[in-house]
Image (cartoon, rainbow, N blue to C red; front, side, top):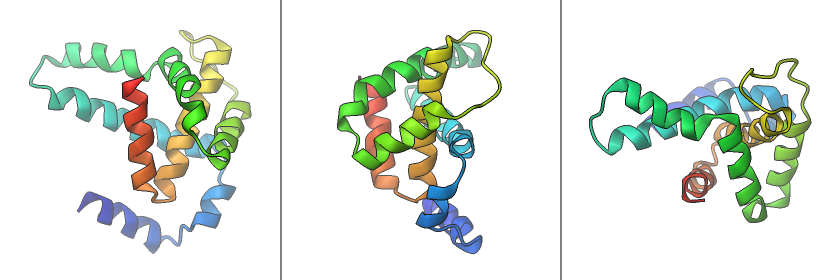
Length: 139
């Protein structure tokens, strides 16, 4: 139901596979960040009821730049050539800001990871997105 709803939003706004390839890597990372955040929060909440501050602390361990940088390094060999190119575009994008708690290189790789997630999400390639998300928590 939710996936159908998302697909309809993209269809109603004429977002095609070709369009997604033309999006700025930072736009892809913007939506990819949200996709990953919802995935991680869902994963944590599905493990049982817990105080919000504990859930937040657990989620930060997954979503911080260092963790995402480590993930993309660990799964890179499992990505297609096109997916590696998307990661490279995201990694090389000039964001203008670096979070205060992140190393610049880690932040760039984290942006590459988020760019990949956003790319797969907007392409509506939910099967591959699911595979990548599963890889991200199994490394």
